[in-house]
Length: 300
Ligand SMILES: [Fe+2]
Image 1 (cartoon, rainbow, N blue to C red):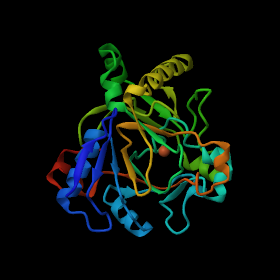
Image 2 (cartoon, rainbow, N blue to C red; image 1 turned 180 degrees about the vertical axis):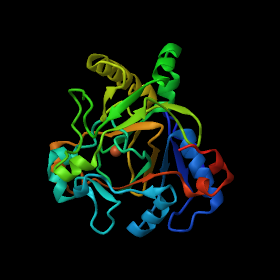
Image 3 (cartoon, rainbow, N blue to C red; image 1 turned 45 degrees about the horizontal axis):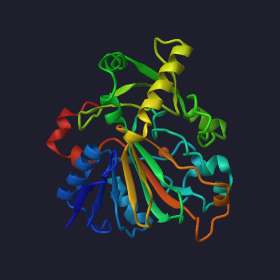
Image 4 (cartoon, helix red, strand yellow; image 1 turned 120 degrees about the vertical axis):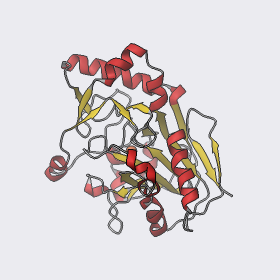
């Protein structure tokens, strides 16, 4: 029997009693989708998946997308990425720690990335956590006057162009002109209404926003720094420490996330510190929602 229970932390729920090698029934898929929207992220425990079965499950959440940084893609499954320290590309600290910075997957793409999932294949004995910030709670906690102001604002986004804190790593680098031009500037609201669940969230106030329309450079930097500091307070954060077989799945429209920094020792992976997560991201809405009558009300 599938059981979904809150993590007991700032957000997130833990899912047990489901084997994703089997076809997930519509009833269970519906429960997973609405649990994700309610809790912002899910941890699905005890999976033993092939790339094929993982890909099949992920496809239920939307249209799987290829990362704009093409050198991160797996050759056999180009929508999938190997995250961690086990591959040749991960010897480069800029790649290995390229997610150790607050961000929202796909915030720099016109068509928003809605869901990301990370399946734990190898887990280090220490560290390796992913931190998830609840941007709905962060929005609701704002002063009402600021909420009103933010609702009228939009920001320009470009991959990695935001201002970063001194203790943060920088995003995985753009390496080719093609990658640079594939990343076009796009505009997003600062307060995003969820297209299915209807709740409002602060959206992508780190990593990619570099200009708030109608604000000066100084006003932009000041407001974004304030919002980022607000949204990343510990009271809004769930820190997930992986066990092998976990899938961490988060709603990018309601969260930001970051990896915990990996140390230099992680440059040489061994049985104690190897970390490998298979990452898949989707755009659009889950099939179960698309195929239901609720789709009539979706405005994206
Ligand atoms: Fe990410």
